[in-house]
Image (cartoon, rainbow, N blue to C red; front, side):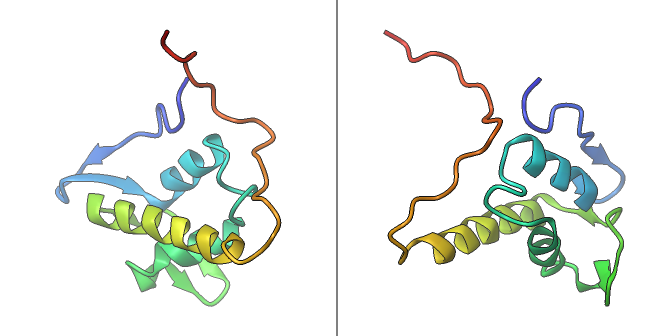
Amino acid sequence: AGPGEGAGLSDDGCGLCISMRQLLIILKESGILETYLSTREAIHLMSRSNPTAVDGEDYNLDVKMTFLDFMDTLLLCGLQWHARYKDSNCTAPQPSNPPSSPPPSQ
């Protein structure tokens, strides 16, 4: 099963939507969450497109994200990772369970 497979995109009036909870599952399955980004950081980045999802320490992870919100969050995750590792001499941590990839074609 690939990352996010079965995460359940829904079409409930907002076009093709995904919940914040489903995006967290995708980030975890792909090895991004907890390797490159904490859950709290990911939720903070997701809530930038919808501030009502976070109320102090309470999170509403059932808030739907549009495709644009989803892509914006992925970009913010990449920028967060880049800002963390660009100026350091250390290499980025590798996922403990990297997603499988097909063998290179010959």
